[in-house]
Image 1 (cartoon, rainbow, N blue to C red):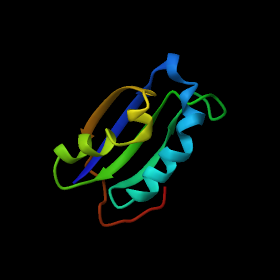
Image 2: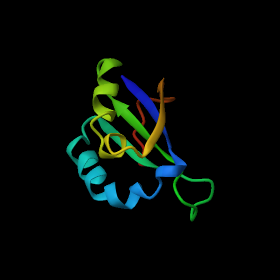
Image 3: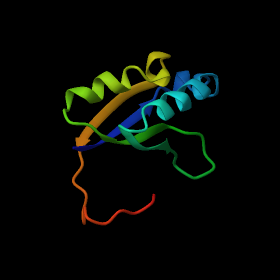
Image 4: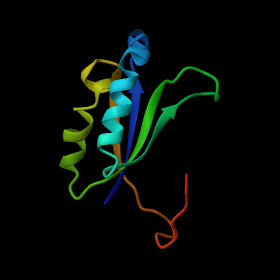
Length: 98
């Protein structure tokens, strides 16, 4: 099943993003079978990130919390909150690159 996971960063902890980035990217690489798409959220393309978004492919909803709580951004205190939504893809038979 597909889920959208939306993170909000703690503005007071934004200094942690560059410190944790290499470990965060390695985490995403190691979990690319589940985290199908990942990226930062910004007001404008050249603004600082205010959070992140993942599209996750897992069998059970409970697997999502287990996954994101192991992310260095979460463990390191950058993230302030998370919201998880079931995602139903329109035209599921069509694969498109993001």
